[in-house]
Amino acid sequence: MDRKSRATQLLLLILLQAGPAVAVQEMDDAELEQVNGQALFVSDRIGPNSLTGAGGVGSSTDFTYYRLGLDVDMAFNLNIDKLQLGCGGSNENLVANACDIDMDYVRFMGRNGNAPGAAVTSDFMVRRPYIELAVKEDGNKTNREIVGIKIGFESADGALSIGREYANGQVNVERGGTCDTGANTGAGALACESGINYMSGYLNVELSGKLAAQTSLGTANACFGDTTGMGSGGAALHANCDGNPGNNTGADASFRDPFFVRRSGTRMDKLLVVSKQSHHPDDFPAMIYSGLLSPDDSVHVDLKEALRFVHTIILDSTKTKDFFLSFQREQIAYPKFDKSGYAATANTGWWMNIPYAAVRNLNTTNDYGVLGSVALLGEMQEGVNVDNLDMNQSPVSNCYGSSKFC
Figure 1 (cartoon, one colour):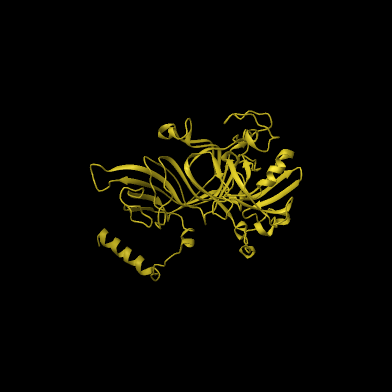
Figure 2: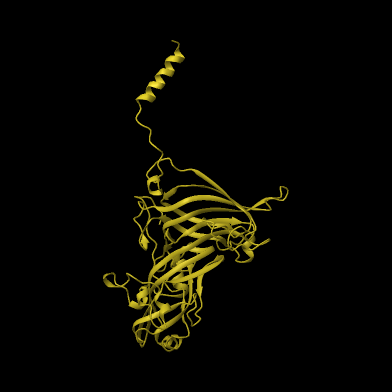
């Protein structure tokens, strides 16, 4: 018997000794997550104007999109001293001597509910990362060109802690000015903060918190948005601001719901909400729950808040879908991950899309003094001015051992 025949017989013997064949069984996502090495490259092509909400020929959706990604979850804990993208360039005519995205001391970390997670050991999570190319005139080999590149994720979950705070009398080395901790509002308060200097992108931010207005006649305590957990013992400040649909009764029912500010633009440096004295989705209502006026009275607020006061942003994977960073030569509306439509149109330059972020449980007091008391009372229904008010948010440390960062 030659060597080849003996090898064939050995193989047959092994197969005969093997147990009965087992049929291939389908595994769900939870089971697949327990298996190492299951990740695969995935690719896709989305034609021009092929999704819901397309704008037609020549619009911001008239591109061919090519997508290449990984079917995986990624976890990381990351610190960045200075995040600057798109400095100078064509957007200088909008805001000079600036960058499309400019942030100081950015920490990507995990979360614990509405607060950052443990330093160093908590993870910022993203699901299904991918790169997408927006191609113009894809059917014309002569004129075909890439006009936009996007780095996106199906979802993101974690905390962004941004910036640092200065002590009284210190000079702000990032943005200039001298910190005045005695000033709760205005330029003196702003000089105590560094963080988000400029932001280009789409922001859908849920805000909630407490605003105490001190006057010579007394204090008016108001709350806005879903303030669940801000009161003593975990109770809400007031039933009218706990976000419980069961409490949504009466003419002022909209005051009791979570409050959102939606903004889209290039090189933004502030959140700006002008009171419309109505239940408009972008109005900023607050409910007085104790103090100067009768409980359940409403007050409207004119908000002009520099983004440098925002130090903690919470992303929730159940709501923060289509989180991405992109840069493009012209306006482009990129497809959503699930191809149900298009994200908000991205302007020229660098762009960050944050479809949901929470800035929750802000807590601040503003002293209007003797002269401001009468004016404040007159503005309760017309729009109380809130200009660069310190919201008492502080960045968290994400340092490891003796490593210096924050």
